[in-house]
Length: 112
Image 1: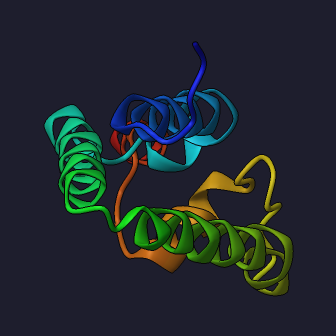
Image 2: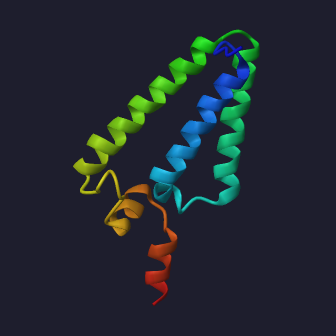
Image 3: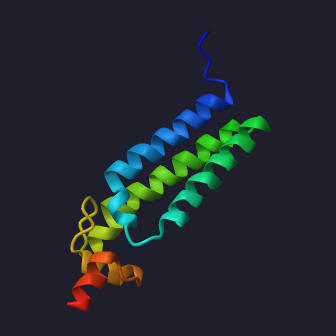
């Protein structure tokens, strides 16, 4: 009845990761346009479906593992080494400066 050897299982894993990531770390992408964030989900979902269809599921899970390692390094080591809290992204001004962008909060403060 239950099988993890399906494309739907792969889609469920990917979409669950996006949901949890958006809830916990969405504040790191506030400065990006919504269409771009949606495009990222669509591209990753399409890649997942294609790789699953081609029976290359191991590539999906290798990709997931590599992304998780990169995200852990970024949030636990790299951001704190630049004076930014890896969990909250604060101070926002410093975070946006490091990225070279002007976030909504940063832009609103500049207007005042």
